[in-house]
Length: 108
Image 1: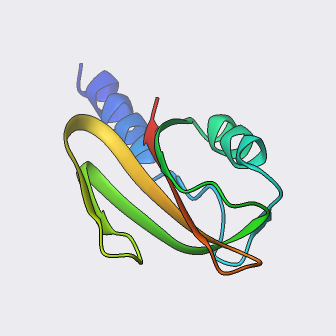
Image 2: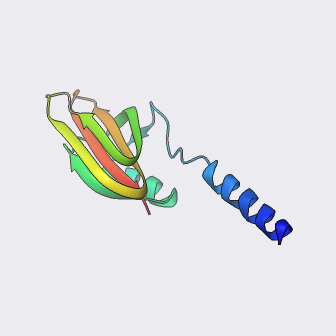
């Protein structure tokens, strides 16, 4: 019984310590579909978008557990509360003509 419990705890720790990092600041995407594919491969689904200017480069990655809060460059505040059991990510990107796009994802 103790051996089975030890194995279970080890498995949970390995899963919890896994790296969710799906991309890096400075990474460039030609379109939304390219970003969504990378996120899907990492176990994330899109739940929101603000803007839509492509191609664009990742300038910031905002992460949260259960909830996520961020402010757009133009001042609009956004909050995604009550996502219990999910990891949330807001990917802030900047296009060549300095337009902001923020895409929000949650873990599957």
